[in-house]
Image (cartoon, rainbow over all chains, first blue to last red; front, side, top):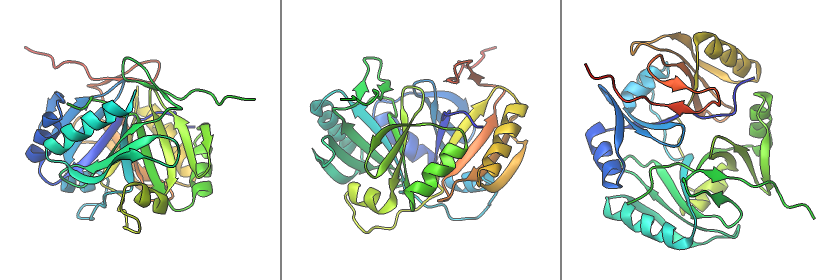
Length: 145
Length: 145
């Protein structure tokens, strides 16, 4: 059995300085320093930036082209205004707009942008899930009738 | 400013039933049910499985091919034995081996496998980071001399 957890999300990037500057422009602060990699603390986990070539090598397939797009990282908010404000902040930081925030079919409100390498971020308000005041997410048990 | 958090990691998949079976074979338990999507609770966040075509549409680019590989999701462990046991469990569940766990240049111990769609997981022991007993990760401040 493997534990039901994620400790670290690593994004492969073309230009570490460019990517770090982008996430810092979002207001994020880097933590641990190591050569060739940048880490940001999240809640009980971390997000890392790492050169794409180095990542391919680390994955045991040096030189392999690594694709981007089929993983979305979402930030959830307590309301629509939070989504709108963060979306504008990301665009101001140089993000590429994919879909401006809008009401979506599942009953929430969501927009998408991509970072300098095309990594996809969703900003969402989901009325069925709880974003706690510390920023963590709680998925409530389904209401049984 | 955007908050320094990730609420949800969504993996675009070809076959939802196949992917769900794979993660359940790892010992994971699905939470919230909604048509066409499967969610697993993590610590204060969630991981979701969602059809790749649906994901492209949701991202505001229907029909676009989404690439895989440049995002690594890591599970950290308190020791090397934890890495080895989880790696074997993943292979037994049908994962594709990318790199068997081994000592790595940064002073840790790490292996990689991919899930049925090629999504990349790293299993690692990092002697410089703390995996707490509840499974959360703490990046300590650097030791200053």
